[in-house]
Image (cartoon, rainbow, N blue to C red; front, side, top):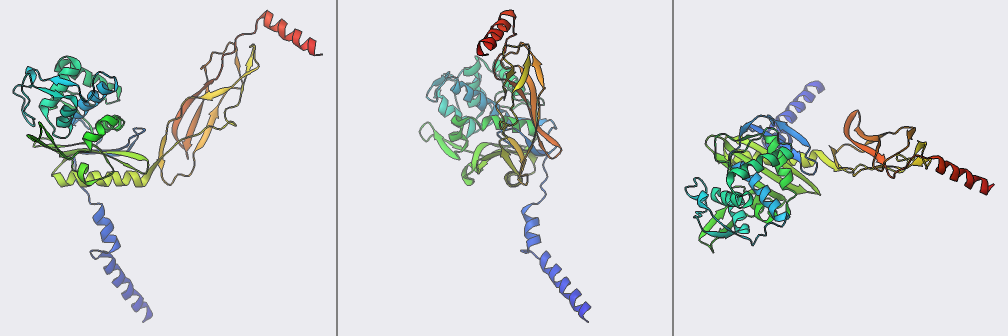
Length: 381
């Protein structure tokens, strides 16, 4: 009888656990499976890819090309070529621009700040054309600069064909767009535009509304872009900063607008919950002097270069450091000469490796150096 009672209790508990609102049902509801052509989740400081699905598949770039246009414009500001108050003049290239526009006409003047507002908040194709022509002389040269910068960022599966991206021949991947967004996350000059949901140009004659509603609904948002087209579906590149860590989620080719936002939220939540950035350290016990043979000094100090942050699971409590240095080196030793390397492991997984170099130069000991050292020793006797 007791056995039947126990089985009945188990059955009631199981039934309750599967009811809507129960812990199991809520957990499942929080993480629905959302179809997308591709997605990628990256940590922004290091560019580490944390999660991906078809992240390296080449897909149409579409309006996401404007993110590279924004990056190159931000670099013009950093280099001092422009300020946000610099006035640019629209060329004939804006004539006949299709798609999203702020209705610029040839000869019209507008500040860089307002053009960035039109580009980032309003997704304006003509604003992209004006910025491109002013930065590089013409849009053709600017497209070459876009592809060169993409190569520098490691975007090996991306090809841009226009500053605004409304062509059928451009392509990119979710992971490549993530790398681009990691670079954009460092451009503080763009943050006010990325975080603006609604604004105006020409007084209040031209209204701009940001398709990326995270700019309005998520106070941790650091911006980027949402866009859609019939051919490419609904996409978003979104970044957020929480507890000193920044993550980037890129979602391409969803079936509707809500799906892209929901999947991006899920990815960002998983990133902040599952990983952390740690700064590796090399203590003095690792960086011991290395003996020098045939030099004016008997040893040289070893030093490491700047150590970058590493992304590890939040469950990781410590890293294992392995230092590889020779017992001696032969003079002459150059300052900065590689002596060995330091490696950082999480369990058996190599996370990062960096060179260890000579902190000072050690010349070869010649006859006169040897004579000097012998004389000094004799005088001390």
